[in-house]
Length: 118
Image (cartoon, rainbow, N blue to C red; front, side, top):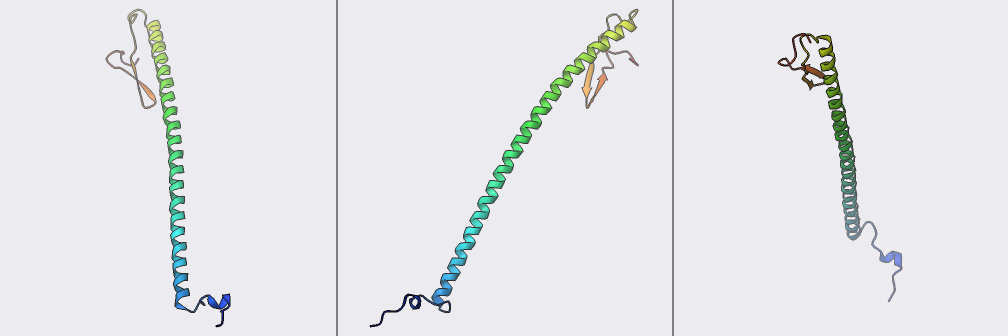
């Protein structure tokens, strides 16, 4: 009995068995590639969500602080306007108090409380 050499014992690429192995191996590689791509996509998606959440937190904080500062400024302008208006028109407007309403970057005078052209 003759013992085959190790290289001769392996199927050649021309045999159907080797072709099946090669096809299975290629399929496995494709599956791994898809899994790696899916994992990478999930990681990118999670990272993008973390960035979005951080940016939204920064924006919301900025808006809240800006609103607070603008409201304080508007109250100061309202108080100063009332004081100056009373000083200029002391003879007939000694009890005047202004009511200014903030709207889109401006202050509007309440027409029921402020005289025309004030």
